[in-house]
Image 1 (cartoon, one colour):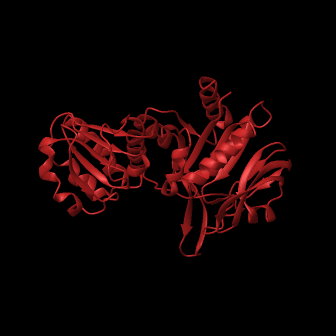
Image 2 (cartoon, rainbow, N blue to C red):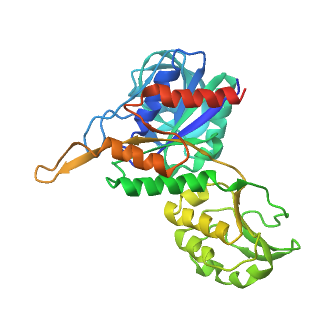
Length: 357
């Protein structure tokens, strides 16, 4: 069975990201699938360090694999046999890889760079881990380009407005799943730069790799009548996407980015509208690498603040309204991670793993 690596990205703290991870572990632990886990950043704390409310922790069984920072081992009840010490350093120490020898709760913190996550995935492949779970967040999603796709965990802790949640989730689905995966048709003579090419393949302009101000694009706007491809390897801001979406260009013009992350790190609604505008005008948006949105989990919980007492307590928005609004907004499975249980989400990933055989 080919390895499947899946990211779990939360839109905010307390949206159910750790619960989603725990549900997947519950489904696959005890099955004939080796499990590996790591995290982009820090997760697994007993209580939320802002609200003081309890948080679900990550329970690992004997035989599971993990890649975590060294200091995580000191505060975890799970005991791991260290099999490799990687040349990857984090604020919590060097990343160590190993196999759980005594089941228990694990605090998970790992790498924050794509290349480091790639190394960990390769190590877990050598250990025959069929499923690798990468815990992360939408605002630090960049390394997840090394996965085969991600599950978005969203909910009331991000915003109690169900319509807004549905719109943002729809936007993320469009950004990740609608543009095509493509290549650059012409040679890149200056790696790390944005480029505009003519119909004949001549370079019309070179621009910065990271585009933050519309002024960075102003000089290139007049070139689009004879342009065929715009390529941007770096992050592009919302104002730049709005500016580009309003420009005139020839039909069939391609706008190519390295991966969906470059648009996700902008304002997602602005990025979604950019994709729709370009497509409506006869242009095409594409990526060199895909990062598909596989599913969405929703959580009606949010930490309600009691201002008079300066305390937080668990509050909830309407579960059914949240679920129905988000389901209507996206064309991937949407699961209430608490009431849906492990079967829906685990079954989805199991079917993806079977397809990869």
